[in-house]
Amino acid sequence: MNPGTFMPQELIDKFIDELWFEKDVDTLKTLSQTSRLFLHQCRRHLFTYIHLSDAISTDQSQCIARKAKNLDEVLVKVPEIANYVQRLFFVVSNFNNAEVHIVSQLLLRLSMINECSLYMYSPRNWTLVAPELQSAISRLVHSPRMKTFSLHGIHNFPVAFFASCIDITDLFIQWCAFEDDASLGNPETGSIAKLHSFNHCGSSAGMEKLICGRSQDGSPILDFSHLQELTAALPKRGALPALRELLKRASKLISLRLKVDEECSLNGVFQPSSSFESLKSLSLRLSIDDVDPEDPLFGLCDELRRLERSNSLEEILVKVATTFRLQPDFLTDLNDVLTLPGYTKLRRLRLEILLWTGMMEDYDREESRRELNGAAQTQCSQLFNRPSLKFSHLVAVEGIDDDDPFGYFYCESDSK
Image 1 (cartoon, rainbow, N blue to C red):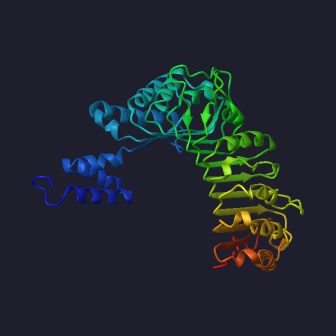
Image 2 (image 1 turned 180 degrees about the vertical axis):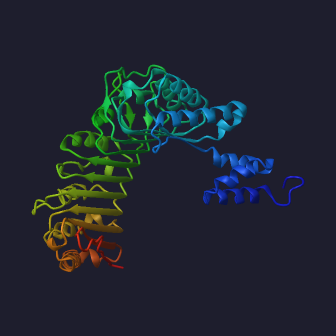
């Protein structure tokens, strides 16, 4: 307890934490100016996350630059505040030369952050970003403390940028496009980033350049041998070779989440490899406007058969979103493969089916619900009766009618 206080510092800190959880920012600002007993914990919350953006303003670049200038003035007066900043969300806008300098100066002061998100509201070309700002961003992201890096909506982003991100463990990429014209050498260290989680969603052109690309000495740009969590989208068939290469190198993978669109297929994705020996959780979202009646799950059952003797799966989640009326026997193959001896470690199976329809009269909602509910009960009877398995399913119909709009219509059942 500090001399002259009426309660331990730990209780004061807990009270301030509660204010932060309640998002009472105004009170935190007031307390930070009241006593030194409150100062550290208030600053820790107020400055831990810097958000340089303004989606509403028509003068976005001016607004972001103004925020950057105000914060920079604070850091000039009280330099130690920079030590509290851990996370940065930064919208790269169309800055003029003066704004570029203001923002760049601020970024150079944020040497202690460990998480950085670069965002563009509409896809923009990285090559059009001013060199001074590119340099400041590079210095920030390549710092030894940087662990999490996110990109959204940036085109022509250089693959070579990642060759020096040797300390990043978590990488998130959405709606980006990559180029690989620059040199990929990293002569200073010869090290590469050892990723623990990798997430790429949306249409990210050139992902194969990042996943399969190699430096001048032949080493890969990114090390996936320590990868534990992977989230990926398969919008087209061309993405399969890169995904297969990634899975081949991800020998310690624990959680895999895949989104598969209608033009793609799972065939050949789950080639037996060491990647699946440690895999515990598999989540699949199948988005399809038309279905092959003989293969409504896009080759999932065939791929699960490939893994039957070389997996440690404990949890499987399958989501199917479709406008096609599924036949009631489509679950037979899933039941057959998951009752094989290689899936005795399975502890949880979740099946979600969403039927999309434009007009309500296209479907009898009650009939569809009963039909799919009955299919899950009868076609997967062995799974329902397995004592060690928690099997749950959800059926929903969604559509819009001018006179009677309706949303989700659920039917859920559990074996336990």
